[in-house]
Image: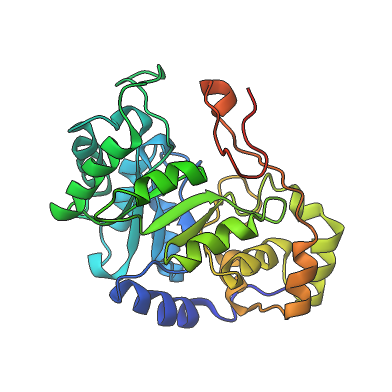
Amino acid sequence: MMVKSFLASALLGTATAMVTGQDIPPLGLDTAGIDFYKATSTVRQALDLGYVNFVAAPSYSNEPTVGEGICEADREAFWVTSKLPNDRHKGREVLMGVENSMGNLLTIYIDLYLVEWPVAFKRGTQELDRETTLIETWKEMEILVRASRTRHIGVANFAPADLEAILSVCTICPYAHEFELHPYLQQQEWVDWHLERGIKVIASSPLGDNSVLEDPFWKALAEKKNATVAQTVIAWGIQRGTTVAPEISKGATTLEENLGALDIHFTEEEMQEIAKQDRKTRFNNPGYEWGVELFKGLDDPTIL
């Protein structure tokens, strides 16, 4: 079983150089689901192992303790992403949102600030704000870059029409798009669309609902690579050109284990076989709860 053979030499040698070069590292830690009181020690452990890419968000309910974990590191040596809450899309609420995350994370700037969902709520509620448009929100996001609150801005969970609307008016355009990607929801054409336009892709929920860990195809491929299934899936995500930041809170994988993915490579034939495993199945779709049709034009959209 492959665990540590690459470790800090590979991650620090490649990813830290990328941070210094102002680009997002290919492997990271999504802090979603980590207990508030365990986030500080978890992040410090990740830093000790060589991690330099962290995904945070107010919606994770642990940003302050994630900040306590990263604050002792050299600020130029790591990358942190945070996200704009749905109820801060309007006007100066966007600025207040990023400054709240900066305070939580104890940092003088965010590397990447994402619009978490293409859905606006009225402040402090889950009541839909049907007046504030995505374009209005994006114009406020651009101000954050000019004000040095964040180095880059991007989006998450956008449908093609949502993103096209932003691209038609942006002066500072999306650096990255985070959306659900895993072996059962591969969305290769959508991934390629971004990469052809120079937009980074961040894989959300890269292990899906974790059922892939018991998939016979992936178990056989992992055995062939002398790796765990989680490592093999993460390696596939990286090789296809996406940034992968798995959650560890569900117990399906560990910080140390994930680093082993950096040692794994696939042949073109193997990549073609993996493509055949796509089920076009989405595991995270709050559109049903919110009463909003999400992911129009993509696999497995909300159908109300």
